[in-house]
Image 1: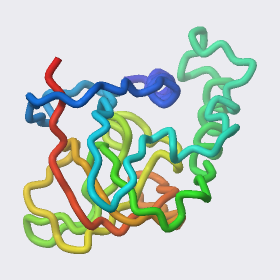
Image 2: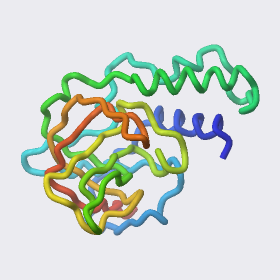
Image 3: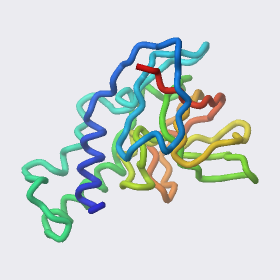
Image 4: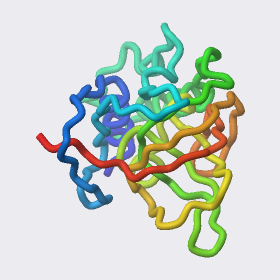
Length: 202
């Protein structure tokens, strides 16, 4: 996938509002093959005792504009080889890597659904991973902004977790910025509870 197209896809996904599906009694187990690059998880409003349920939009400060680097450009007309496209991509990457976190989230005990990008393992178990808002982020397409990446450090190693698994993750958020090599995370979470995401049946 051309880099400019991938960035545009990331922007489109980032700016689209997640669908708030109502919780259903029937649920469908999901696996990475069930998703396409750019897919976001519907929010089923399922809560967990002691944790505040949040969505990815809650992690972006009001007024922060992920499109700022592309103002005045017609992205549909630019090719990756165009110097203007290269300049815009570099500017966007700098802007996104420095994307501000929402200060009100510091110390909050939250529950959020996303896709997993493992970073550290202990045998077959995962001890650290990135949680990202859409399928393929950091793997098939460039990383999203830092305020859309959570670096999760599990209190206890987690078994059975694969790349791009859809998961509910609960824990305490901090505002520590980390360059993980897979992307710059604007948040760090002490991961306390993990649950496979099940997509509501329509």
